[in-house]
Structure formats: structure tokens, C-alpha cells
Length: 204
Image (cartoon, rainbow, N blue to C red; front, side, top):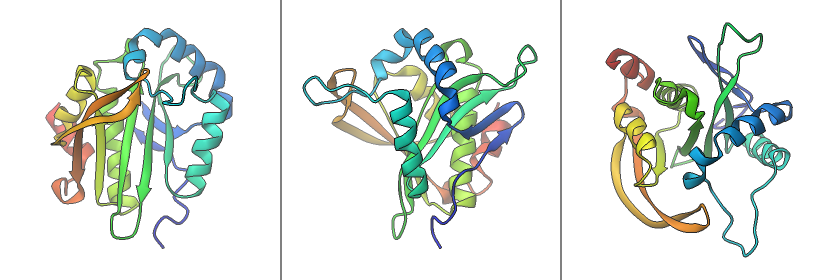
């Protein structure tokens, strides 16, 4: 049956691991987010409600876990092995959300990576890992990523991976306090029969 028992799951590629987000990640997640506040602020989702605020970490995890149990999301933390650390450090977050089954078989993907780790291929590798899992294991057909036109680092991720630019979406999401335009990128399973991760690693 579509969507049955899709969570939890852990994905691995070399030193990079995508694992379920946990309440115990609160301290490290908050530390990484504080250190990256200036880096992430221009792309941060915000509430359009007057005086609205974003959920706390625990509220976010509870919401994501509910969505995962409902088979509509895959909420991952990105970690990378570090010989100086006993536990792999948290270096980002990736969420597959808005999973639709039935005749659509599609989802939306979003991500962020610690600025200190940017430019090392972590984001495209993580996106490729999650996309392959959705296509090859869950049987989804389409993955979509929506990006602010000004967000150069994220645009480079989808360009490296060969996502198609499907056009402009005016005032698509509420970002950093205002409705913001986005560009929509997509990929279907037929476009990567060899696997997106294999194609990305072969191109590096």
C-alpha cells in the first residue's frame, strides 16, 4: 500500500547521514541555527499572521513527527562524520514534505546547511540521497524544490543536480516577513533511471 511504514528511515552516503530529527537534537540544532542566523535569515519561512511567530524546536519536531506518521513528510537531520567528535555533528536539515500519493505521487523538498560546511557538496548529495529514496523506495514520481531567485547557493544545488526550471511563482511563500517570489524546479523518476546520486557523484 502506498505510504505504509515509510518512517523512520536513515540514509547513508560515505560520511554523510540523513537520519530522523529528534527532540534530543534541540541544543545542537539551536546552536547551529544561532551561529547561522545571518546566513539563513533571508530565506527563513515566516508567519503571515500579524504578530505571528515560528514554532519552537519542540513544536516543530512534534509537527514533523505527526506528518511523518501520516506518511506526508520525511523530516531528516543531516550529519557528517568528524574524527574530532564522538557523535557526528549536525550540519543541516532536509525535509521532504507535502507528499501526495494516488495519481500524483509527488513531494516537495527543502533544506539548509551550516555555512561553515557550504560549498563542499553536502547539500546536493543530501538532496540526491533523499530524492533517490523517494523515487526508488517509496515509488514517488516527481520531486519539486522552490527557491528564492536571489538565493544563489540553493540555485547552484538544483543546477548541479539537473532539476528543471519550471518557472516563476510570484509571492509564493511568506519568507523573512514578506510574501516572496520563488522559482520552481522539478525532476521526475524517468529523468534519472540510473539514480540521481549516481549521476551527481559521477559528475564531481
